Amino acid sequence: MKLRLVLVFLLISFTITAQDKNKNQTILVDGNCQMCQKRIQNAAIKVKGVKYASWDIPTNQLSLVYNEKKCDIKTIHLAIAEAGHDTDLYKAKEASYQNLPPCCLYRDPATKEMEHH
Image (cartoon, rainbow, N blue to C red; front, side):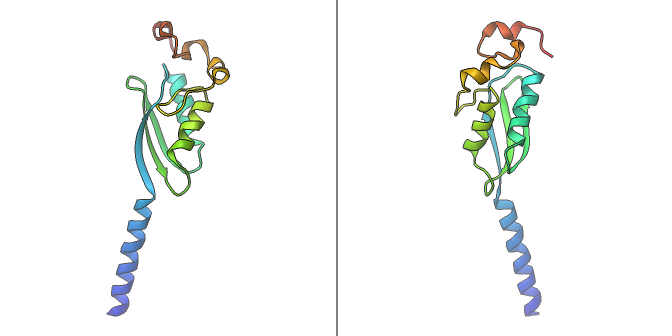
């Protein structure tokens, strides 16, 4: 009987610990189109510990699920900024931004009217 109680307690403890390490968070990331979407999501997913990344074009919100024991939110922001996209925490370097395709140059309001692929 005691062994069963110990096993149940250990199982519950492991389950709670496993749930604690994953964090859901939404951040703002500037971009225009599906090419931006793919680039932003790929930059986030390449960060070790990120399990899910989905960027919504109309709202510019990136929904994330990541393991807090393997990465932090600043690292994710930096990876996205290095890919050329401003976040609500970091601004992309000018060189990274200028390497984006013309329709993805989101800082220029005229690009919102361009044909996006």
